[in-house]
Image 1 (spheres, rainbow, N blue to C red):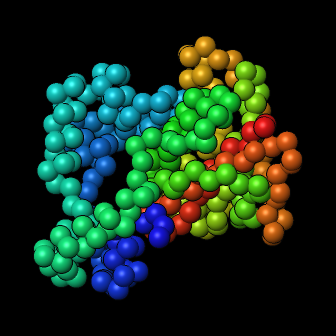
Image 2: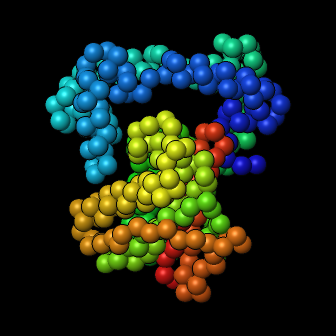
Length: 288
């Protein structure tokens, strides 16, 4: 077993075809508007308002709706209206599969129940770290902020995997790293495949096509993303009374067999399973 999305689970079980999933996702994309898109469609904000709010999210750990209310662009009542409209019109993948004729309602109910049982071991409400880890609250915050910004900044849907203790880094297409110093020391790394690297670039460059971009630009986008995450970690740590500094992010290049950690280091890996089956890996390399 492994962490899966419902559509992936159905394909692997042979219940529906990949073509049906693609058709259902296309239907979802037409109907399911993000909060900013819904607010624009309702005439409550402008695209420029949403763009400014997204830029603010790079340095503030706030949901888009909270930012829009906090800056006076939306009232709390208007935000509630937008969220209510989102919920009322949201189409889940199972419902979309019924609409495209890949499942009937009885099959959907049966498969959802089986899926919940299959995925129960992987569902957790909070970041789980090994017991006895020094500065555990800080590192838990770093992981939590990563998850939030993968959603808010990159716009990617994902499911977090279980924390794994590792002795080496994987040989990914790109591994971006940033060192923490001060009251806590450690290295924060994100490893991605070439397709995920492009997804990061698409989000940060605000364009759907990045194939023409040089590799340096694509790599810089992931470096900028981890810089944003770790900048937020340092700022939040400061608010909680911890002095934390960050060094500029860099690329490291593990060999094809992976990069072993030093004997005095301990590694934690947090798999980030993206909706389309791609994988990001967050690593924390900490002193023992």
